[in-house]
Image (tube, rainbow, N blue to C red; front, side, top):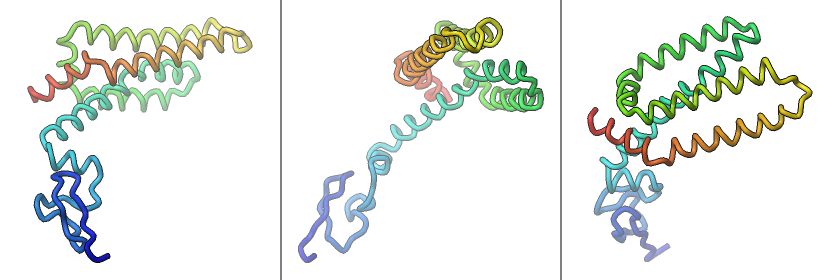
Length: 171
């Protein structure tokens, strides 16, 4: 098309149709929102991705006691041992992050409480509630609501976001 010009989403500069990259800032003509954010604010983009990475590193450690108890109860010792080794690896890999989280008493208490409540819930379900009981459905509803609520608070709450931001600044 003759006369067609495209506008860069990062710098709002008008470019010729035959250009694949912006002549002003070098951004691609097909750049997505992540690419634009990376181009406009590279430090902010790195900070946001690093904080998301920190959250993803802590999350498996919260659910590991539950799965360890389930595998031990079902007699799958090999899988439980593999899970134990992988959790040990995750702990040693993220030791500085975990030590930093332990400096905030409320955050540490919340993470330990969440993990402990899920472990107790699974143990109660395994040993006290029979399979044909109506409590199975209520327990499942409690599990999903509790887990969804905590994960929403963990991912969107200001306490953990601020804690991970402070860890990012210090590291």
